[in-house]
Length: 122
Image 1: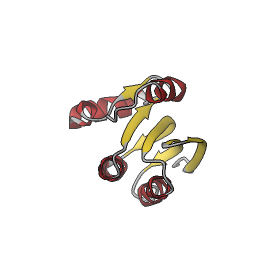
Image 2: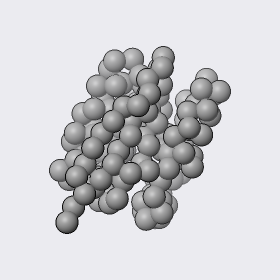
Image 3: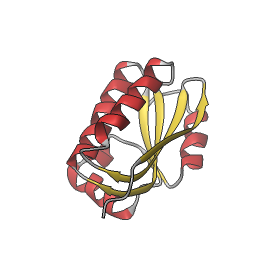
Image 4: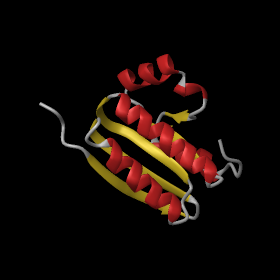
């Protein structure tokens, strides 16, 4: 009944990388997402865009992973930007207050354009 989880990295350029997530972002997937994001940060891509268009479900473990990734990116003088947030996840981000410190964009392309045109980190 759960959607298989998949991670893709469709874009890396300079300090910027896109990590595209699809399926259920839950307790089983969260450590893998965090680990892959930390690899990208340590490989010199501390400005991350998380493309969430394919996320079908997100629990507290997924939210916790996003906060952890955001903190690690900030420690590396980077940022975490969210893109293409599904409606239910958007409401969850709002209820938890995470939307106040994680910038969001309607698509990964819009987030990339904004990040590439902005030398300051969020």
